[in-house]
Structure formats: structure tokens, C-alpha cells
Length: 95
Figure 1 (cartoon, rainbow, N blue to C red):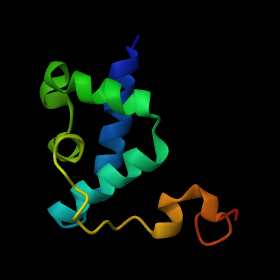
Figure 2 (figure 1 turned 135 degrees about the vertical axis):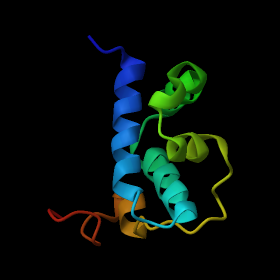
Figure 3 (figure 1 turned 90 degrees about the vertical axis):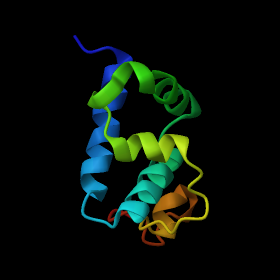
Figure 4 (figure 1 turned 120 degrees about the vertical axis):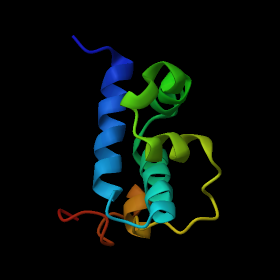
């Protein structure tokens, strides 16, 4: 059975897989923005605290997204997607 932290690693690595086709800096920014937008603070804190223990099981792009200041990097995540309050403004196909 996977621990909660191992599940977070799996989820974060899936996000990294999505962004892998982007240029590296944009991928890091996109991962960071996605995690901030859609994960709870507790989930983010747990994964950040688990980085050393996860070792090479955690994608390096995720490690960078969690540990580097990505605020100045351009993100490929659309603005409407980053702000769920913009329902109907392109944030979702169902909107």
C-alpha cells in the first residue's frame, strides 16, 4: 500500500509528465503554478518535506518547482485555469 507521500509523488510526477514537452523553465513554472492552484497547502508542505526521502523517485522538474522561486517565470497554464473563480472563462470544458 502506498503512503500518502508516495501518492503525492505519483501525482506530482504525472504533472511533470504533462509539462515534459515544454521548454524546461516553462515546465518548472507550469508545475509550480499547477500545484499552487490545485493542491492544498498541506499537500504542498507534505511533498516539500518529503523531497529528500523521495530521492530520485520524484521528478527533478517537480523538485525545482517546489524549491525554486518560479514567480518570475512564464507559465503555460492559462490564467483562467489558475483561478477557478473564473468559471466559464475557459477554465474548464464544462464551464
